[in-house]
Length: 136
Image (cartoon, rainbow, N blue to C red; front, side, top):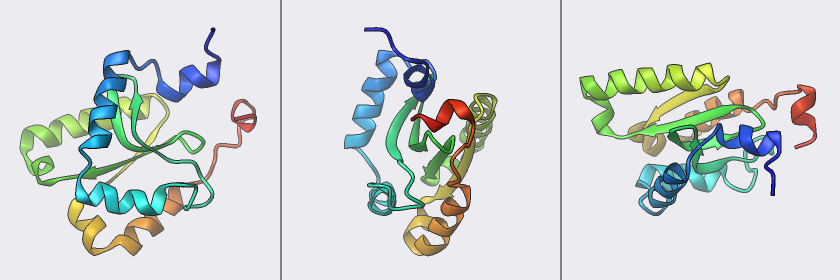
C-alpha cells in the first residue's frame, strides 16, 4: 500500500529503527513525561491531537502535535551538560528546518509549575490552516 503525503509528512521519513526507539521510550517514560501526558492525551488541550514519543526523521519527540507542527520536549537534568545543550540546540535547529516549532520544559517545570507549562503549550496549539492540512 502506498503512503499518502500526510502519512509521510507525519513522520518526516522516520526509519523503522526510529519507530523501535520510540516504542522503547514510551515504555521508559519519566515521571514528568507521564504527568504531562495525562493533560495532553485525548485532545485535552485546545482539542489538538498530541502523540507521545513520536518518530520525526531521525529523532523521537517527547510529544508532537502534527496539526500544529509543534514538538514538546521535557528535559531531565542531563540536558544541563554542555555537550547535551549543544546537541539539543542542533536538534531544535534541524526540527525547525522541517517547519516545526520546538518548546522545551524541564522536569522541574512540569512537576512544580504544571499550570504554567500547560498555558504555554496551549499558546502554541493553533492548527495550521493551510489547505494541505484541512483534510487531516
